[in-house]
Length: 152
Image: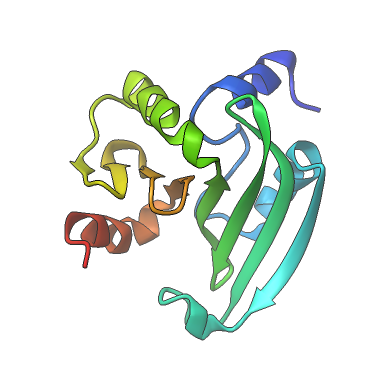
């Protein structure tokens, strides 16, 4: 069971809750789903849908994930058995405040456009085109950072 401090951080801090292991497998992250999701669903997807997946693409859709003082849909994406990234959906009206929270916590964005603000120092991004926070694992950072550095 997480501490009150951990739960408070989950509600207000613009990062991932303690216990999320980017790069880890589903078993390493299972306590997060049990603790921080009101409910969750595991979906196996065609690897062709995810360029970094060669053999498997699994997504855990976590409903009610506490993030920035609200229950959210968080999508935990596993490529070839490793947690590659997490999308946390927010509303369009919240994106400006989310970016301010990122800047307050992490400093200036590494790259910014009208569609996103990417914070390479924490492997995170605030997206405006699809209102969400994105956090990605170190092993996929080159792919995400290349895309954010040269969006097409």
